[in-house]
Image: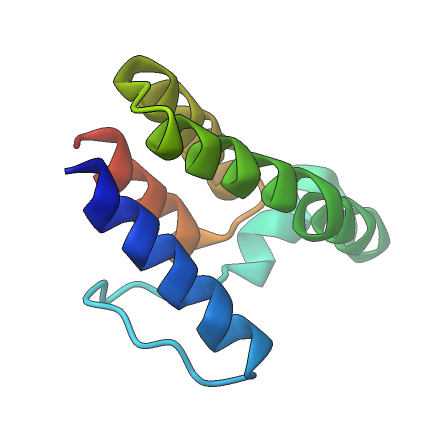
Length: 106
């Protein structure tokens, strides 16, 4: 049900703004720094790319997911969840990638 996802995103955003620890049912590490550094070649490049992902791409993807929910665009929601999964995994954000994968299957 799209409203359930919208409620989840609103709840998640509120928790982030309040700087609360967000608990999930996913037993995966938040990040794998070693994999990220190996992927990008060195720590400086990884940190720069991770910052870009977290500060620009992630926000845009969450906004797109929320719009797809609001407009009840299931195909667009799944496409954006798939994109979020790929970008998260490439950035070595393991837990976020797993969560996006779960959303993609909805």
